[in-house]
Amino acid sequence: MPIIRNAIRIGRSRTGFGAFAKRDLPANRRIAEYRGPLLSKEEAEREEERGNRYLFEIDRDHTIDGSPRWNIARYLNHSCYGNCETAYAGKRVFIKTVQPIQKGEELVYDYGLSYVKNVIGVSNCQCGRCRRRRTRRKRKARLVKLVKERREKRKRAARLAKPSRKKKR
Ligand SMILES: [Zn+2]
Image (cartoon, rainbow, N blue to C red; front, side, top):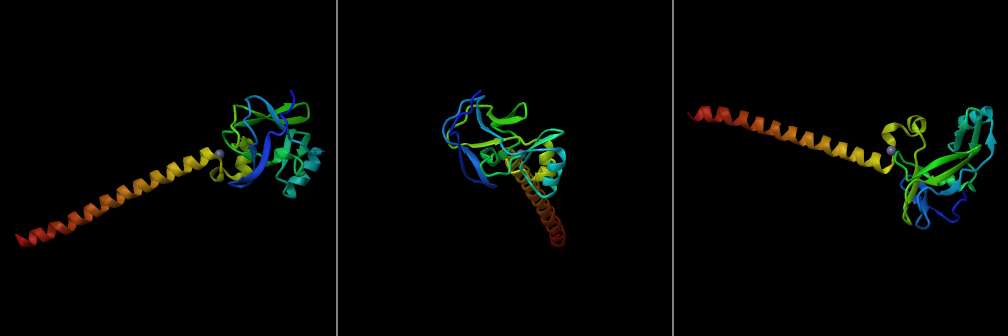
């Protein structure tokens, strides 16, 4: 399956740089290859310790070092619900669309649970769904607090009101 040429534009995103659709893209098409030197397990571990965040593990013994800037696929950010996914072909990895994507949309794919757990931190994920979920949760927490505060206020008011009424009688 050939790669759609000129599908990606690099631009500013919420978390720094990101990859965006340069034009409307159909579903189930390759749009980039995750390219870079192929590392052995030992080399990959060394790179990981040095803080290389672009290591793509193909299997236990092979990892792609995607840090070179000419690897355009490195600009795709993580999302727990991506519009793209990775597709393996031997020791090569491609980025594939999973749905039709409109020009200008950010291109994202799921980096996998271990990345989210170990690198981003589950509660720090900046993908659209996670941000919306956190906003909803915060809004709900605020609402609960507000209701509680109002109830307390009413109780206080009732407590204050009672003795004064008694005094009058
Ligand atoms: Zn997320």
